[in-house]
Image (cartoon, rainbow, N blue to C red; front, side, top):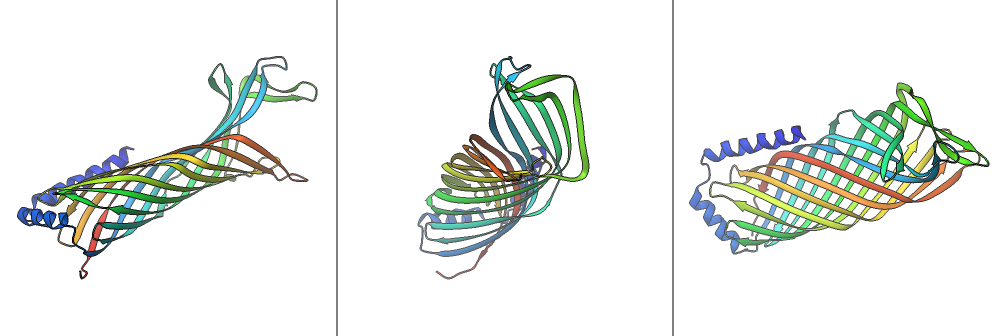
Length: 349
């Protein structure tokens, strides 16, 4: 998060330095704002490119059912598993914007440039009196790949130097993770008896196991498809410095994930589907008009998604068999900071 704020602060400082150069004539800027207020039927085409840093996490959690704690006659406790995947990406942003009168359409794509290795975390827990306790905890090295596309359609309303734009946005994000190596600590052993069932047997000392760094232990893919509704507000100062904020919400976020556990015996593939998740998106931006056709910009955005769904597990046994679980949930949060330039291409009316 600190790196994100540093990027935005640096871009803000650059914008302020540019603003002191007094390139823009304040009278001309006001005249431009008044012209926009008249919303002439003018066609504009803009392209933009930038560099971004994205950080955060995505995780899923399932409930696995009740077992006895400590002994076959111990207290029944609910158990589950939570897997958290780190997001840490460097992104190239390409976008274009088409405007005609008050209508505006924008499409943007983010391609991954590079990434950093993060730490994947796996929590196997039991719930005792409303508090979750780990009976197994594991970590692994995580490598992620991200692709993102979004498209906006908005209707602009000008009031002097202020611009208000109600929008709808479709956003698609695909993330792929690969986990290698593993370190696991067992605090309880899972015991089983055909007559008495399963129970968690407390170990006198935690047991630690590990796998080599080169061993691929898990792969995970997540596809997000979200239709948002929201509004954006923008203000342009007399010297061409702009500030922008926008907010979007969605009650119909769709997510599908595929999780392959490669070193389990038997190995298995788990698929989770969320049909009606909740998502929110906040954007903050600063910009500066360098010339009539060139603008520098910076943005800081925050995305949140939460939803519940069903899990389907396919075990690669002999013969293969399946398991269905209707108690699965997904939660994701990430922050993206970007800086770049946009160019307005001259067009006729």
